[in-house]
Image (cartoon, rainbow, N blue to C red; front, side):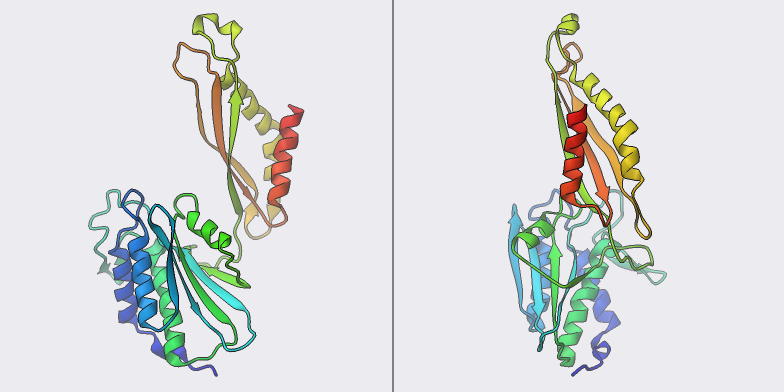
Length: 283
């Protein structure tokens, strides 16, 4: 039985829930960062009679997961998004949402507490309408998207599975049907530290790192960037951080290069690792 659950959606309730989420800070550096938002969502689900749980991922920071059970052998749809935001920076009254010119303004309205509220209220509307779905709908509000995606990793480790997912991450006014894979890599280059006055007796790890970057730019990066997907674009590699040495008067004994690698459908994580291993072995 499928009822018109849209009748159960109320714009004022939606705005109120978005305001509650926005007015609950969840940026890096505050205690239990996202847990206040997770509890707010959890309490809303419980009030609606939808089973929900909160569990700690790290340092008191919690994911929230809810499930609306189906009544048949249909598939499972996951609605998911992150509960953290970037800091307020210089945004005035960042955690006091307001409406100006029919726009909601506050930290995280777009990225992505507005989407979280839409997902939560959609599930509530289905429940209120008495609609009996064949499959299940799950909600997952996860921590750490602005960091290392700890919340999503925790979901996977707990064995959460779905047949399809809708991620509420903002994408302009478009609907994205896919996304690139992402991994951050760290390459540690070792040299031999000696006094700067005897540099010929040492091995400068920073110089070695420079040669590595040149070799990557000449051989591997063009190969990576040649791989294209008709919708989501090409693969990429970006040097994001480099650090090395101890002080100017000492030959650098170590240098660390960190880079971002994004890949497209058709590439596999194992193949990417193998490609880097093969490249380094040939140097």
